Amino acid sequence: MQTLTVELEDRSYPINIGEGLLGQHSLLQAAVPARDILLVSNTTVAPLYAPAVKSALADRRVVEVILPDGEQYKSLATAARVFDVLVANRFGRDALVLALGGGVVGDLAGFVAACYQRGIDYVQVPTTLLSQVDSSVGGKTAVNHPGGKNLIGAFYQPREVLTDTDVLKSLPERELQAGLAEIIKYGMICDSAFFIWLEHNMAALRALDATALALAIHRSCQVKAQIVGRDEREQGERALLNLGHTFGHAIEAATGYVEWLHGEAVGVGLLIAARMSERVGGMPADDVARVEALLKLAGLRTAAPKIGAAKAAGYLSIDKKVKSGRVRLVLMKGLGQAYLSGDYPDAALQETLRESFGA
Image (cartoon, rainbow, N blue to C red; front, side, top):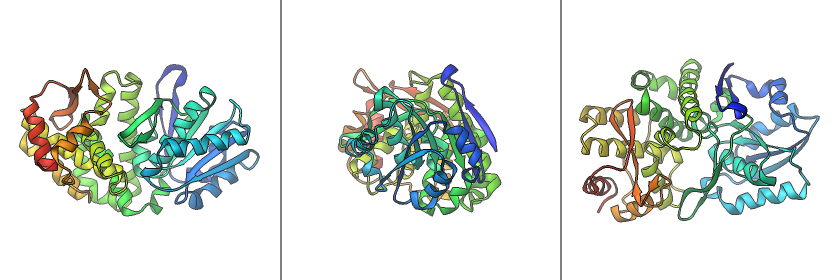
């Protein structure tokens, strides 16, 4: 097992990464000290892994909430259902929420924990590659709104993250590919050597090679933990972690959070961001081509839905990085050299949107 720490003074917490962690009862028992536990999972994950969790916590009161599977259920209505269970079972401020699932479960459970009685503990047990390398780390919790993704939420750090790489063996190929998009993102942001490593090891990752997966997950979490430790509430540097997300969120919202997985949309968003970066004079064309080639090696889509530039621009306008009415974008000078900017020609953005989303 490898352990990383997200350094946030009195709110610091460990990320434990390894094979077979769900089978180590002592680990779960140490991570979850509460007597009353709300286990939040979904209909896909719970049958596979909830029994192991409940077995490890057999001496506690564990109440389950099993949600439907899908991004469309990351909503206030679903959160209200979870709050109802907490209230009905008279859970106090010493209770704990345990999120067992992917990004939807983790984000929603964390949001509920942040709000219930003004904040109770929660633990992340991520079961998708995407959640293991991104959403379970850093304390961003949220639900979606029909007008946009993650518009209602809070910064609220977990008590601990337990990442069992064995669970990836049950992951559908499409979900694995979606997680690879977030891993590629880290190389593009600040680690060109990692990007090169991914170019040479993508086949091993897709084949679930244990050594390659452990390295990729560890490096991804390491980058995110370091950035979050320096900028917890996204006042500056943390916004770089949203590379590709502004465009990706527009794809998800425009298609109703049903047709595209989050990572698939982010993957296309990474390519759109690279093309925009080339257009404003920073990103070499060869680097843009390498991004597209690596996304294809990962089995990811590279073409956005033709929703139209105007509709895409509408979704960009409510992005959380908008400041003084200006959409700030994460762009790149080259691979591993990301920066946040609102200082770009409007014509360049419009041209990029038309090229990607259609007129």
